[in-house]
Amino acid sequence: MSSDFGAARRAARRAYEVGRLRVSMVRAAGVTSVAVVVALIAVGQRALVWLPVPLLVWVFVEWRGTWLLRGARRGLVAGLATLALPPSVLRLCCSADVGMSSAACCTMPGLCVAAGALFGLSLALLVPRVPSEHRATTAMGMVLWVSSIAALRCGALLFGEAAGLIGGLVAGVVAANIANAWVDRGQARARG
Image (cartoon, rainbow, N blue to C red; front, side, top):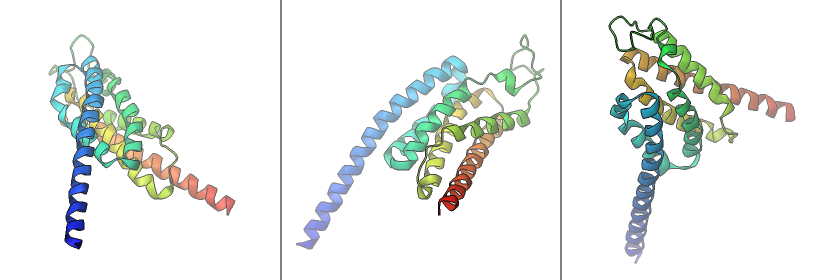
């Protein structure tokens, strides 16, 4: 008798998870298609190479849900903002008439780190007010989604610049969440 109940419970759980995964795939396709359209406009066809990254990240985030999903939704806004970042900001030494892919164009990973950190710190405005025990999960959702969208921007950059931009974004998100934790801790001490 108890084995029948256990088998039915496992089958129900498996059906539930498969259903969630199907819904996650549909939602991920919708969100990623919007991101790809924006990336095609902002970056060009080079962004299509990175298409699987945001698709897989969003499937995982949607399937996992809860606080990870809340953070990822905020990260979506910031990630789309990275696509609006003009490449001339990331490569100041390139002239407009030469083009970004020319051999006469230098690379500047330091600027990519700075731009990524600036975007990451700006996420402090988007960090949802969540209970402290869920802050890390929410921040992880933001980092996952911002990084996957930034990968679309980085299709036009060299590896060092792409790593710098994504590394700066991650550092900025972490710094913003640590600052929020300190503020919350200070407010809790003042109340108690």
